[in-house]
Amino acid sequence: MSGQGFDELAFAGPAALAEKVRVREVSARELVELYLRRIEALDPRVNAFRIVLAEEALARADSLAGFDGPLAGVPIAVKDDLAVAGQPVTRGSRSYGPPASEDAEPVRRLRAAGAIPVGVTKVPELMIFPWTASDAGGVTRNPWDLSRTPGGSSGGSAAALAAGMVPAATGSDGGGSIRIPAACCGLVGMKPTRGRVSHRPAPVAGWLGLSEYGPLARTVLDSALLLDVMHGVLPGDEYSAPRLRVSCVEATRRAPGRLRVAASRKLPPGAMARLSRDQLRAWEGTRELLVDLGHEVVEQGPAYGLAALEFTRTWTRGVYEESLTVPDRSRLERSTRQMAAAGRYLVPARRRSALLERRARVSARILALWNDVDVLLTPGLATTAIAAEGGYGRPAPVAFNVAARFTPWTPPFNLTGQPAVALPAGYGSDGLPLSVQLVGRPGAEDVLYSLSAQLEQARPWASRVPPLATTTIGGTSA
Image (cartoon, rainbow, N blue to C red; front, side, top):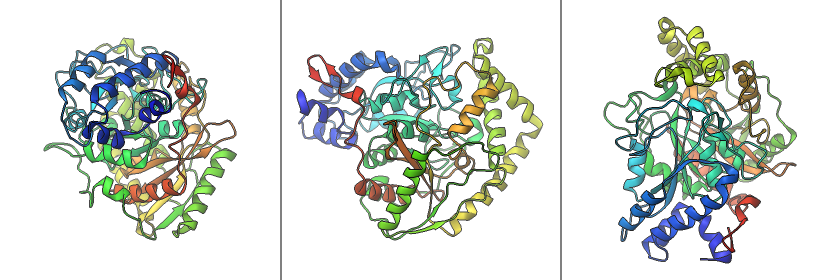
C-alpha cells in the first residue's frame, strides 16, 4: 500500500472500504494501521482528536476476520458527545464524569455494522459554538488552511475526515453543528429529521430537542450508508421521526424526478450577516444547475418570522440545562458560564413549556413552504471558514455575534426538526470550500439524498483533497 494506491485507499470511503474488506482485498487491521499512521503524522498540526484508541481499534480489527457487515472493518471517528465504552464523554470541558460503561446507541449500531472507532474527536465546550476551540482541547484547525476553523461543533470530526485521518465520522447538530463543519471542510453533512437517531443513553434529546446525531462523509453515498446504519429509535425515546420510505442508500440510486425547488438567500429577520460574493456565486451556480437538471426552481423562501429569536431562547436555555450536568461548574469557560446565565435569565423554568409551545407555532409557519415545494435551497454559510479561533476566549455576546454572522441559515431547521444537508459547491477565491444547504420535509431524507446524488454526479467534488492530506508519511505520500 504505497504511492497512488495508498492515496486512493485512504480516501476510498466507507462503502468502498467495506467491500474491499468483504472480498479480502484488504484486511480490517491494514485499514486501522493505515489511518493510525495518518493520525500520527497529521494530527499534531490539525488537533482533531481528543484521544486515539489505537490498541483497542487494532484488537477490534483482529476480531472482525470474516465479518461481512455494511461497514465491515471501516475505521470511524466519534465526536466527543457520544459515549464510547471505557471512555469519558468530556463534551470539550475540563469538568466531566467517569468513563462510560457502554456505547451510546448510535455507536453501538455502528459497531454492530462492523465499524471500528479509532478515536474521539474534539468539540468546543458543551458544543455551543460553530468553531472548535476550548480551554480543555486547544484550537482545532481546518486541513484546507490551518489558519481557519473546520467549523463546529463537530469540527474535530470534520477535520479528521477532510485530512484523510478517518474515512467517516459521527457528528451532532443543534444549530448547524454537522452542516457548518461539512461546509467549512468540503464534506457532506446531513442533519436528519428530529427523532431519526436515538439519543440513548441520554434521557432526552439535547438542547430541548434542537440537537440530532448524524453522519459526516465525503460523498453522498457514504453519508447515506452511515445514516442507514445509525438511524432508529428505542422505546421511550423522546422523539420519533416518520419512517423512511426507502433506505438512504437506495435513495441515492434513484432519480429524484422533477422537483419543485424554492431558492432563497433571504436572511431570517434580525440576522446581521452579509453573504460573500463567493458564497453567492455557489448558491447561484447550484440554482442554475438545478434548472439544467430539469427541476422547477422558484424564488421563494420560508416565513421565518421570529425564528432567530426563538432559536436563541431555546439554544441558550439548552446550554443552561447542559451546564447543570457537569460535575464542577466553576471549571467551565467564561463564555460558557455567560451563555448559561443568559439561558436561565431568558427562559426561567416557569416559561420553558411556553417556549416549546411557541416553537411549535413558529415551526408550523416555516413548514408551510413545503406545502408548495419539495426542497429549499439556501447558502450554506455566509463566508468560507473564518479564523481558527472563531470567537473563542471572547465574552459571550461577542462570540454570539461572530457565530450569528457566520451561519444564519442553519438554525431555523433545528427549530422545525427538518432534515437538512450541506453539500460542497466549489471553491472560493481563498481556495476554501464553498457550500449550499438543501432542506426537505420532515422525514424526507430520501428526497434530499436522491437530489444530492444527482448534484454530485453533475458536479463531482470528492476527488479534490486538502494539500495537507497529501503530505509525505513514512516515505510514501499520504
